[in-house]
Image (cartoon, rainbow, N blue to C red; front, side, top):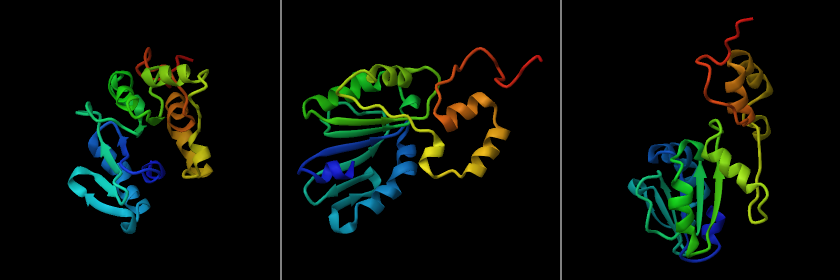
Length: 179
């Protein structure tokens, strides 16, 4: 996102999370570390915005009140936990006039709109689809992963740590077995 903003003047780049508070908690500190003060024209803490020297703007946002702005680049983080209509009805049209790009990521949440987009994007030559389990990220040790596996029900472990799309309905307690 920062590279995209720096690559041409006047770009508008958004980082979206399920809520504005989550966007701030997940990305604001890291964004301020990545964009050195020497690259910044202005930082607006209350608006969660950084304007860089070339006039490009990077803004953190929740999914509310987005319509209207044309975007050059957007990150939708934890997209499975955002409204289903956000991509097709709001964000995708915001990218159209600038031929913008998107990076969409999430922990799966059953077979919802994130799964549909993941599945639909796979055969498209204008999309790239990646699947990474937590173990591939290097942030959770093998020991901690083993502890989590032993303390979580298997469906939740597969969803949260293996990025597996899991059925969300049917059983109240997924680890229950009559056997």
